[in-house]
Picture 1 (cartoon, rainbow over the protein chains, first blue to last red):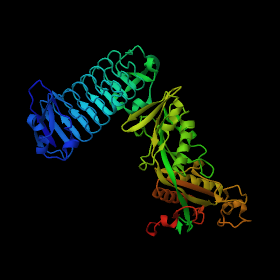
Picture 2: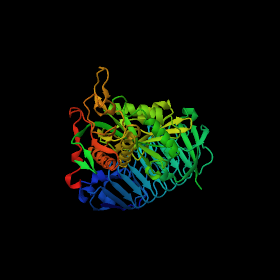
Picture 3: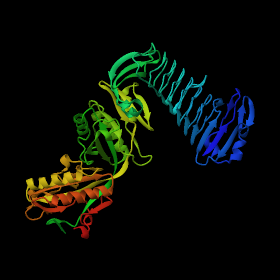
Picture 4: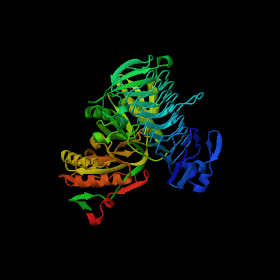
Length: 262
Length: 301
């Protein structure tokens, strides 16, 4: 396992594009220290802002130290495993296609934005635009899964096309907006206007009693077998209230409000 | 060779490869699972006249099914993957999609790149309201129905199984021979991966290839018909008045051999059984020749 300890006490952000196991597994510590990263808008070598030890031949990479202002940590990774022991900055795991990113602290905005595969897990909270598409993009997340154990901010899953996002805490406004497909689970429900403009896809809300966007229509109470396939994430379910929406965009999306079994 | 005093004829069963799939269907209750499975496996005794050979493999415990409901594993065999896909689409679509509360899952990992698309074809019944979901790498289709929704896995694994294994039980009377056949069927059905596609697992109308009528592919095997013993070249021993055949399909050759062995042992212990033999076509039809005597090594007799 390779360990990278970030030494950074400035408010100027660092950017670590391409510091991923798939790139580091075949190079030595010396080579790794010479990889280019950004300090603000200035290119520097990784070794100037971090100390590196071990090797990444087993595909495992651990980040420690001042990672709270490191952007693009794990972005575009395709394989291997990254552990981050502290908070991470913007765009962590963005556009990743495989592998696993585990963050023991909090994640800033754009966590897993436009990711296509792999797994992201955040032990703490996440910022806005988790799994979203960037401004101007047609699609957000297109595969993989994101698990946020804490709270998440606004526009979670914006333009999401495929994949799964599970949030253990509260979720901000406009979750699943303009969603095209995929699944978002809110274990403590969703914030205002969730699912606005969604075309397809599934929002699953535990412990929520009212639909959150005006474009949703109540359909029925039932017990979809599909939820049994993910029951380890949802727990025992007593009943499901099914809403369809957003009717302004065809009404093919669904909002499932779950009554937990007592 | 004799087993428990019963003659085992020195002949072989002629088996041939067929493409197999396992469907796991669940329902709100075991009763509805049985209803669905029975419907889906109807008219599926022999590919001579049916689109597939199918039957219930076993009932599943709640913890064995993907959705934690009562379930039944069903085996399907057909001549090719295309034929199997067509049969499954028709049977799942007409018998399980229509059956109250059911859901359908793949029960066989199968060979790489040899899967068939079932849910992916049935999804069009949803008329645009179907929903695709991927869970742990598997794709499922959710099709709205009048009692909620029908959940069906997108693709099903297939494998090259073996069909046409058989034993023929020749007995003193119809009652005794049927009892022996029933006992043999129970022993064979205890083996996972084995299908006995005929009604109750037993065939009364053993057939030969061809007929005096040109249009028929198969016709009655008069050599084993007691009522014709006096007028045809018979294969029946003295005192035989009834014959039943058990046809066996299996996911592997070893399973078919095990079923033939266990069934023969079970039948031989029943009173009134005179002889156990096997059906073949002179070795010209199938590549697998399962010799009855080879099932019982001398050390185990």
